[in-house]
Length: 191
Ligand SMILES: [Zn+2]
Image (cartoon, rainbow, N blue to C red; front, side, top):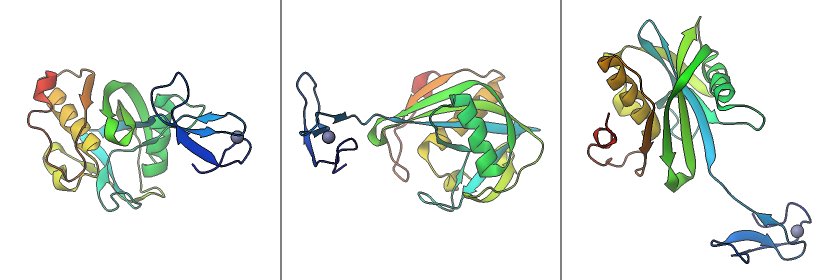
């Protein structure tokens, strides 16, 4: 930010008294603008054993596949956000189930909160999606998955399904899309 959202004066970047990191501070009115991580709410919509994925029609990672997920809006719960994203991205009505995983991504200041989901009825590509489709386990387009968090969520889901029990998982994602991920990132978490 360059200008104060309250009085429109120029902002300076400094550590306020009693704080331990730099913030955008207004020297005119004293306002401090805190930046905090964003929550991405999503779900893994499943019907007859197949998973609904969306091919992104927008940047970042346009053309690649994702589960329905997106930034929470003010005034909604994470479950409502997950259901809304499924409706927006795939015109899909998803019955949002239990929390499945949350994924910390500190280098981009995001936290993914992913729920299990049951797809009710049909689906089609929404505005931000070029194509929506159901994938059986052996057809997941692993080399065309948009984000590391989505890859991890799908792997965890399939692992849990194979063992016949769904847990709640936490994974810290410290690598970027296209980078080699740390070995055994899932097994060290006891999955
Ligand atoms: Zn100000």
